[in-house]
Length: 126
Image (cartoon, rainbow, N blue to C red; front, top):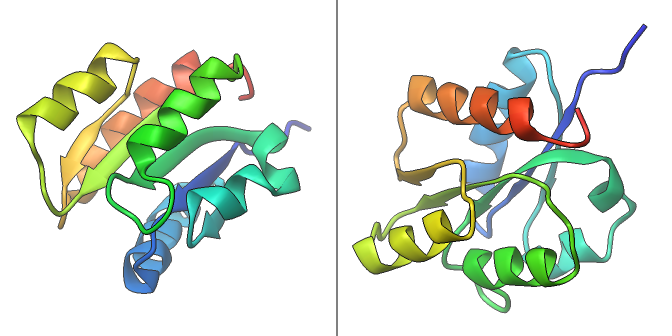
C-alpha cells in the first residue's frame, strides 16, 4: 500500500494555513503546515514533502528566497506560490525557476487543485 503524498503549506497567516491544509486533506493527501520558511527548512518534513505551497511575502525568509535556497541546494521539490500581492515581476521570477502555480489570495480551490495535480506529476517524492 502506497502512502499519500505529503504537501507542505507555509504561510505566516494561520487562517490561510488552516484553510489550505483542509483543502489538501480533503483531496486525500497528507498535509503539514509551517508559519515560516525557516521552520520548514529546519524540520524533518522537508525530505518527505512532495510539494510546497508557500506564501510569497512572509517575515524572515520570503517564498521566493525559499525557492532560491531549495534550488541552490539541489532540492527539486515543486513549489506553488500564493500571495495577496500578485506582482508580475515576482510571477515571472518564480515561473522562471519552475513554479507550478502563482495564485492570488483568496485563490479558487479548483485552480489550486490543478496546480497540485501538475506539481505532483513532476514531483520526485510522490
